[in-house]
Image (cartoon, rainbow, N blue to C red; front, side, top):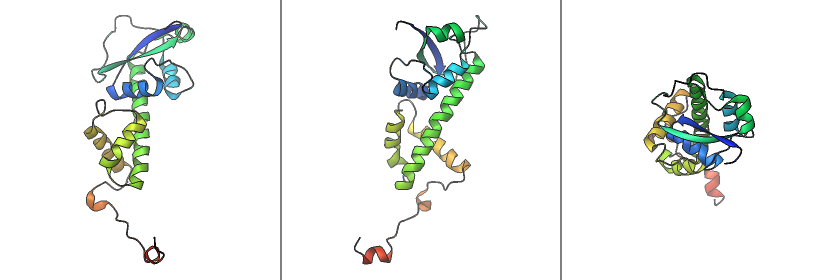
Length: 170
């Protein structure tokens, strides 16, 4: 792309999938979205030319395009600390959206398995990038930490129609 410098960022698979879903196949770094703002904050000029390897937890690479003006002023490199900060921010941002949407759908229909496809569709992350089991564990931990009732069959409240509803013909 003319006028843009590619920046390769090591990240987790589901973070890459989320970025591509939100910003397209060739994501441009702009400050009019949360991802671009955070990336703009952590970009810098290269400080250690010999350092090439990063943590093994980042098993994928996403390529984001930075315009030349930002490249000249900020650089297009993420050191290990900034890379960790960007990935943690993206991870918490995605998980917060996941928790919010799942809580919303659980209020309507209290079944994790039934609501998961709709939440996946809204977030834009396929099960190839973030497994169902991993999502279930994350959501379980979130509900436990936040003091919300856990989703066991025996904990799900049953809706019983009231006498007024039956009498009025609902």
